[in-house]
Length: 368
Image (cartoon, rainbow, N blue to C red; front, top):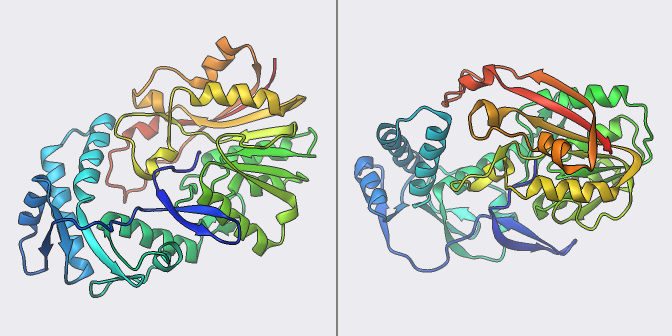
């Protein structure tokens, strides 16, 4: 997947001169309605619906009370259980919850019993006092836990430690079929390009299966910075060259293999936040295939990991890879592998019955 782009310009990382992304701090004076645990959370929801900002003043848990009441309001008033209905439900919740605020001073949250979040010091060293939406703070807290504890990746038999705002996989079927394909791959392993590297899982897979050099690109500076640090810890920086930019960025060489795990769903008007790692605009695939042809050796292969999710959820009837093969004239299919996905976790709140029909896909293309 492409990494998320929703974060505002943030602090400059001095060792690399990369400007890291972060949730935008609110430093301007705005009118707020204070909320404490002794108050009625339903009244806070009414204030949010009317367009006001609500500032949590006493305990971190008070913000959780307001958000819980807000979820009930949204569920009651936006009850459509279809896939599109759930997207609209999330969009309404996202808009209203963004007005629940917390105050930060000297890199700490000014409420009691709040979690310690290392990102507040790392990403906001240049801001003394500001406000952040409560949901952004929750995201920072979750991301800090992932960064500290790591995410287990079965195909690597190891963990990755994703830097803040960096895409990492939460499902693994597509990575499993890619790993099996790499085991069977008989072509040259001199070099590969990983487009949209994220937290580096596919790059690590390429190295695990004997590729000598990987050029990894990403449009998200946090992904490049985080992977650079991770590679340094593993002492394998010489094997991976990182490029910040869209698609192939400034990656010049032709290569034996190009791998791409693109977004699986077409862009909609309500796409915000980290979900942008999942959604593609109408220009993405035509631009990608045009550039891929320039970077692929005549005997090379192009591997895309995709899904029929957009078709089974009725967001579109077309598959952009099939469209390229039918109309592009640049590539032809060498191999297509499909695999069913596992059932959704019983812990998920969303209706995901469509996963019964979802298939992940590994497409191998060669120049026409």
